[in-house]
Amino acid sequence: MFSGKVVLITGASSGIGAETAREFSRLGASLVLTGRNKENLEMVSKNCEEISSNKPVPLKIIADIKNEKDVENIIETTIKHFKKLDVLVNNAGIAASVTIETTSLHQFDDIMQTNVRAPYYLTMLATPYLIRRKGNIVNVSSVGGLRAFPDFLAHCISKAALDQFTRCVALELASKGVRVNSVNPGDIITGIHLKGSVSEHQYKAYLEKCKTIHPLGRIGEPNEVSSVIAFLASDAASNITGSSLSVDGGRQAACPR
Image (spheres, rainbow, N blue to C red):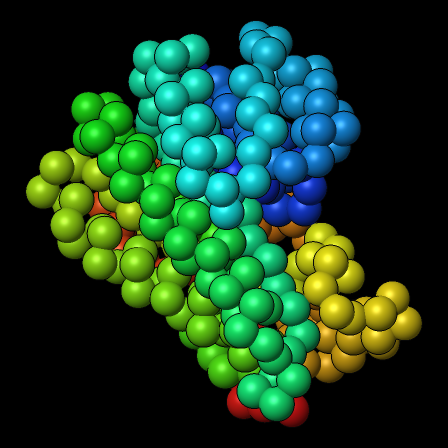
C-alpha cells in the first residue's frame, strides 16, 4: 500500500508513534523515525526492519522537536537521504495534569511548543516536498481537542489549536493536492500520563475509571490508533481532508459521568 513512499513520523520512540512506525512498515513504507530516546528509537527501528517484507532500514533522527535546528535537520536529512517525502505524521506530544490554579507559564509554554509550535514549523518546512508528491499530513490530536476536561487545561488548549491548524492547512493545500487530517485518540495505553505529573498509583486508578467513562467500556490500544493513521494517509481516504477522526471508544460523544 505504501511501497515506494516515504513516511516521516515524529515521536516514534514509544506509544502511538512506535506502533504507527510498525504499521507503516507492515505496509511497505520507507520510514523516517524521530524521537529523543536513542535506545528506544533503535529498538523500534529494528522491530520495523524485522516485520517489513522488503527489510528496509528506517532513517533514524534523534531530535527534540522544540528545538528549531533539530526540526530543520529532520527535513534536511530526510530529503538528502530519500529525495522526497510523501506522508508527515505529526505525532510527538506531551501532557501534564495542571489546572488554571496550579499551572505555570513554563508548563504552558512547554506544552504549546511541543504540541503546536513544533508541528507548525515542521509542516511549514515539509509542505513544498509534500506538494511535489501530492502527499498528505496526519496530525495526532486528542479527544481533549474536541471536548473540555478538567485538570488538563494546557493540553486541551494545545490539541484544540492543533485541530484548527489541521482544518486551516487542509483548506490552504487542497488545491495543490495535499490532504491534511487529524486523528483524535481517547485514552490509550501508552504511558504518556506518567510522563506528566500523574503518579503511578493515580494512573492505575485512572485506568480502572476508564472502564466506566468510555461507552465501549475499556481503554484503547495503540494499534487501534495507528491503523486509523495509516488509513487517513492511504489512497482509501483520498476524498478526506480537514477532518478530525475520533478513536476514543465513544468518549467524545458521551455526556460526563
